[in-house]
Image (cartoon, rainbow, N blue to C red; front, top):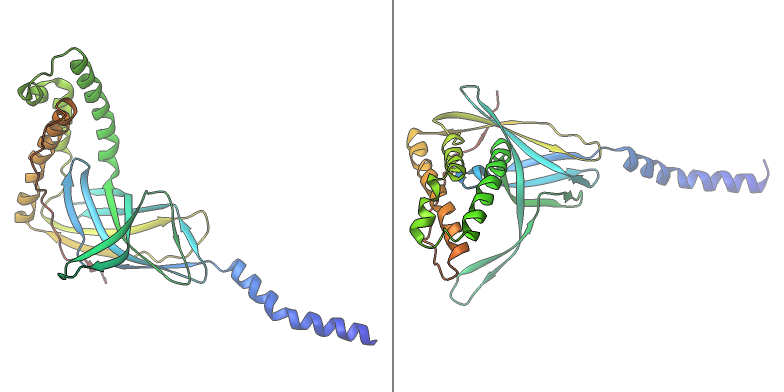
Length: 263
């Protein structure tokens, strides 16, 4: 073997570890790890059943893009519900004024994609909404809004009482009925499973978590049903009367303990 062949061989050998590294990183599937805050936020608003939670995502080996994030919530009775992410916010920094009050600077994202870097962690407050409710509400609300615009154009919404009486109209009565029928929370134990989707392959070990709601929790949360009707009426009043000042609505939230179900 002449000198030039030896040089070529040595050069190729020198590049081999780098090539192996490149191939490894190209083929290696990222591994997603999920860490949850122990107190989710359970509620019911004009967006329907709500499940919000602070969480941390970690991607090992490679960065990953997530384009869907959902949870399955199942009651001990067997009733099962799918919640899809409706948005998330990330805390960027904290600012403290001379008096000691702290303000948190947040960035809010639409539920499109989230990029998790393998060089760090992603911490976010994720808002989940009940998919079935969203579909029904969208359909019923469109019909009610069409009726609202018709009454508005015809001049039949002149006083606040005219608007308060809207719920007796069939189209609005259906929306109010939906708020009553889609209240899914009940006393007992719930299991929660988090799931992700990505354009790329990845590894993720699903875990099951549990939380419980008491009858007192349910009684308190049901107060939100009346709030949904009030919110609907106030929204209509703001549309008709430009100087109308809305009554502050106090929504009830519950923060049960969330535990990993190590069975």
